[in-house]
Image: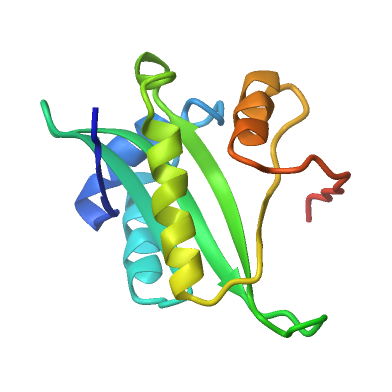
Length: 145
């Protein structure tokens, strides 16, 4: 099935929050999320992407792409992919693959040199998915501020 890929809108906040519960235990403050979505819409180096089921208009997946500058090698920017989530009942149906196809299309349009993402150690199924998409597993570090 071909899902609709589009930029998130402020009125999508509740549906996006439902998707985020796949990777997070807490709900987001919806007013804050709406403001964040508006902010992201106005930043050309950020793309909050949602996947929509065309049969029922339900948002079933989401990810955030952020382009940031790099000073190494070619000096081309890097695409960071974050907050990747697909509702459980839609997993295995091509939603994630289509999300990545769209964000990679955008990343190429933004002249990104490569893309990277961070995934929790316990998300073994997601790691297999990322490997199938062509990601190489490298060691990373994370520190909460």
